[in-house]
Length: 90
Image (cartoon, rainbow, N blue to C red; front, top):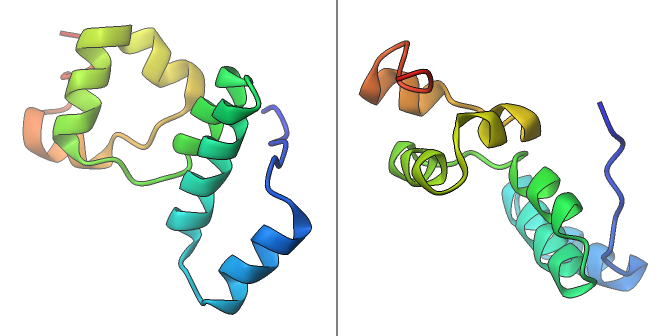
């Protein structure tokens, strides 16, 4: 698995930690910083660390395809519960 590159400054990361935000928000901030830096691949990799709702994953599948979800390693647990074991392959 590819190592994640941080685009947040040390100060920004320290501020988020000091504010006691959860990891999900830090990952989203990392994704936004990566996108702003023009690194869309890394932005998706950071977003894949977040817990996406089932309906968001379903839309991602429609827009980008099942292989996209697999490539970035999105957690599909919620989607499997809602749409069944084979939802990604159907």
